[in-house]
Image (cartoon, rainbow, N blue to C red):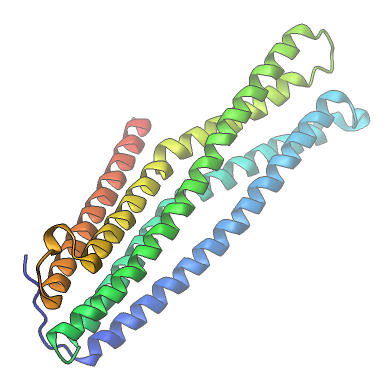
Length: 272
């Protein structure tokens, strides 16, 4: 693969900057919406648990029919709706993140192509490659945090559900609330498991971290003149570095596409 650097007009750079600003605005909006939906989900879950407790423990003994039952069902429906909206929009947010990375990479290309000479353009590309590496690491960290949070929800929820089921079986009472705690925790575990399987946060985080690490290794090898960079001139090393980074980024795009396709196939199987 050879790196061609033809002359480009400033118009392409301006259009690219506009696209980046638009994608960043969309990302901020989607993240703000996700935060509000997480608050909605948390509030609905708390209300559902409280109403379920109060309905069967007897806090609202005088109003158990039909107010508490209707309120409980409404809270459960609200919780399910909030979870659905959060999980369905997460894929869209991931797509915008990938598009933003693509636009940043495109800007690096345009900046390099508009440079005054070949060597200068390659040095600009090298600087932008480091920025792309930092973005991949940031996204990998975020994906790992979400994945780990969901895994802890599954583990803790499963333990609480199992313990509550055992306590319910050992308790003889008309106000046995253990079974409702078990039901609520089972719902949380089911939602977290579905999100983990569908969005594959762990796999996405690993793929992006591998991409960032690969770029970092190429950068260090190029700076120290190691492996394939040994014995080459500055321009040759920078050119080889640009080619290797392009291959790494392309591999990352393929991995993202494979993850999206596998998520879509799982969704279709569930629909059947």
